Image 1 (cartoon, rainbow, N blue to C red):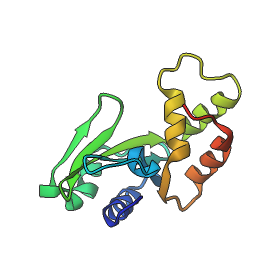
Image 2 (image 1 turned 90 degrees about the vertical axis):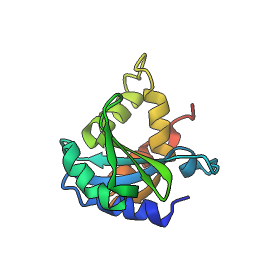
Image 3 (image 1 turned 60 degrees about the horizontal axis):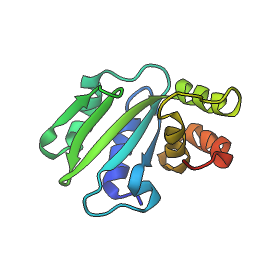
Length: 148
């Protein structure tokens, strides 16, 4: 379930020029979270992901102590604490998501690592902001996608 902090973070992310949608994923989206659970937010971009300093400037007013740390091990992410809880913002490019969904239903995903688990994350995500319906359209396509 989403919280007021999630809503504020989604609004801040949507303020970035390239962000078209924000959704909540992970245990909080599926209702299996507990007191130790972090928050997994996904910011969906059209085109290039905004540079790290621009993302940090948007998120810092909501972060405990104004601290936002950029991580790049698995792609662009921002880590921050809000109200004492860890928030991980994963930045995704819309075209890449569409391509992944298309391949899942045509050629298949074969040995693409975590692709099937990721499609489940998109499908099970709780949309916070999606003014153009981009994530909703992907979720409609994924309705028949099997859980992993």
